[in-house]
Image (cartoon, rainbow, N blue to C red; front, side):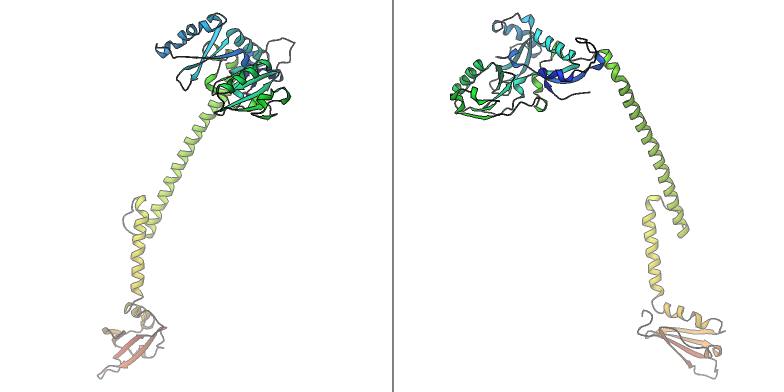
Length: 379
């Protein structure tokens, strides 16, 4: 479980053990958290980058700063936070005993600190502006990306006034509970409000984490074992998901194969000839349908339409066709033995039917003329 970021002074509200007072919290019960720590215990120094290779800087920086420190370098923790616009290294310096004490306080509150940051960095940063906040009787001040400090009121106002004198273009924002304590000279040039620092939703400056090197946060074996069941469940879930996807893919492939077989079988039932490949079925079917449509249209044209229309009239008449011609949009037939045809009703929808005697002595030799009407078959 990971809780929101908060100030180390607020950890009392996160105590999770229910045992006796001063009882240590088991590693398995610890929760991860990012913490703000008192800036009055952290100093920032600017130094020129060492001429040695970068991998050697961690060893050289303590000795470069030795003359500026009030305690032996062996007792101090150093963190390179970045580089200034002029190329100087920005080094955070804090006593090792303070870091160890903060970690002890965290653990006693049921929290394992994932990271720690000077609390002045919780203030919003704006280029050309000095931001001032209030925390339990201490002023926290930020005037750069990583530049800032925390101090008691009597010292803080002097330091803020010094910053304003160095650069008169600087703007000043004060977030304090009571502006009566602000010197008159500063009130005149400041934007004042009573907002409180929101530790949980302030942006973390990840490059300035004090828990680096030997103080980097680690989990004990007990804590890792506590997470093992959840990890195993996650792995099992992933494996089951993979197996499900493989089975679903196999089923889908089988269904696709069945649909392809049905498609080619349906084609063979509709059309004669070689069965095409699945990818060609649509093109072949379109081609066959186009041919059938052309054939259907030809059957509706003359004289084919006229011959089809005569089929019912001529059926069973015993006639013999001796001549057939098509002229002037009329179908003309010379018929022998047409006596039975003379007796039938010459009614064909869409056509005019006429029968005349052929020249000669045979009275059963007739000529049948079939002419489409204007509203009949297509001409």
